[in-house]
Length: 181
View 1 (spheres, rainbow, N blue to C red):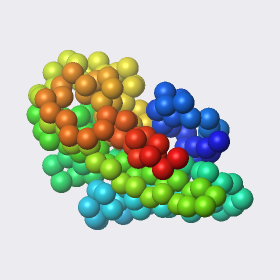
View 2: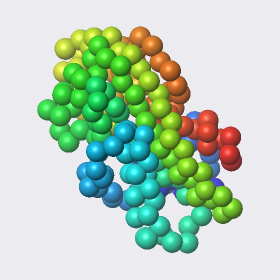
View 3: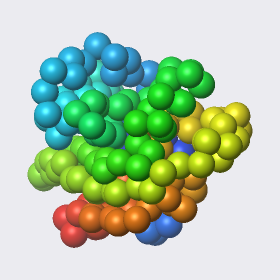
View 4: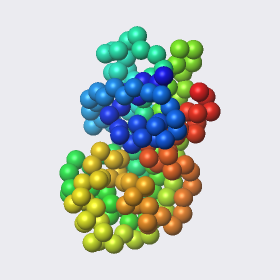
């Protein structure tokens, strides 16, 4: 059994969809204290490592723990979770008619090994319809999502090109995890 150290319902859904037996333990983590003065793949790994360190201070004896984090990179900016509707609008406007990458980091601490992985999924998006963006922001589905992005719903219809795993863009490279478990 895996311990998913995350409040992410999407990561839990990915594990369920792939037949994993897991228990989810949510804990608060403030990623705003992690500096974004680096490349996105380094940033997301720093966040996952900081989450791991915090989690194991609380639960030092747990094994088979999965910790993950994601960010979106677009036009040289690292986009984390939007703090409100105005920030969600800005993030989505940045993605519109652009190339964006989702970086997901995971750390699996097993009984006999530790897996550390950072994966990238790159998208080229068409121009977003402003009314569509407005409705999406109004319905709140963007909340808790890196870059206010949901490639399984809102962003999906605007994908022109994709390079990488959709599950990775949803927050967990399950294919890599399965290869090691």
